[in-house]
Amino acid sequence: MSRPDIFTIAYTDPGSSTHCRLPGPDAGAPLRGNGGLRRSHLRLRRSRTTYPLATILWEKAGENAWFAGNLENAFTFLSKAAGENALSQQGWIYLGEVYQSRGDVPAAMTAWERALPSAQAYGLLARAYRHKGDFPAAIADWQASLALEADNATAHYQLGLLLAATTPEDALPELMRAAELDPNLDTQVQSLRTALNIALLSEDHAYQSLISGRALGTLGEWDLAAAAFRNALAANPDYAEAWAWLERRSSNRVKMVKSKSNGRWLSIRTRP
Image (cartoon, rainbow, N blue to C red; front, side, top):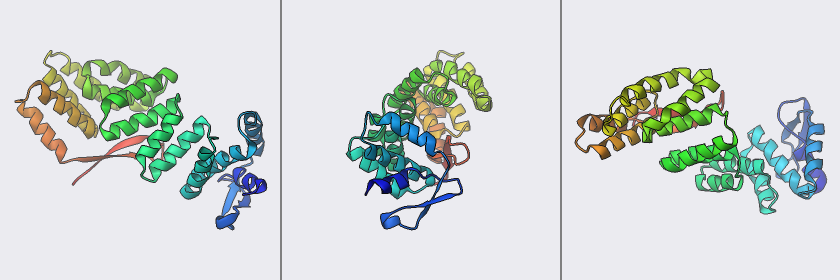
């Protein structure tokens, strides 16, 4: 693709009245410029000392395609930049999200690892590890994210949920900090706080895990609830109530989805 064609793609974005058109196989497909050419030009000028201009524009084109919802173009352009070793930290994050949208989670995680150290990339990796059931790795990545961005309410909350499932005695500081930073989390945090305060009155680890798991289940965090119930059973294999709750969890299938309204990840419970 010639340089003018790259400029045409890179300096387009959804949301304004200025129409441009993609060359090549997508000729005739309109994209809209948002009037932000001056900002883009300044970003490109600052980056020229690191990457050749053409390779920088591949990333910009991929970014715009991603935000426009054109996953195929986003994948093509970002992959081109990656192949030329010209993706920025944020570019690797976008490429990982494109891979995730295509269902290739291992490739997504590899891309996010290339973006490290980045609070956002650590958070994306943490969610991916949680989805795989690797809670220790998820905890470590949320902690790494918070080391870079200490006032991230979502990171504190997600870390608190994981700790409630694995080490209930460590969960409250993270949960309370999350509620301080984001009052919208207060209802969920207070529910967990009440349950954890009750659980920690006992020195019985099986009971602590059971109560924590029940609270997580009430919030729809069934993957974490199941982990807590399994911890209860590891401490007391004959714990009938923990077996009952684990059986209840098995009748609830959980998937993680990203809210279109606010971008938050949610645990969605579905019936088999």
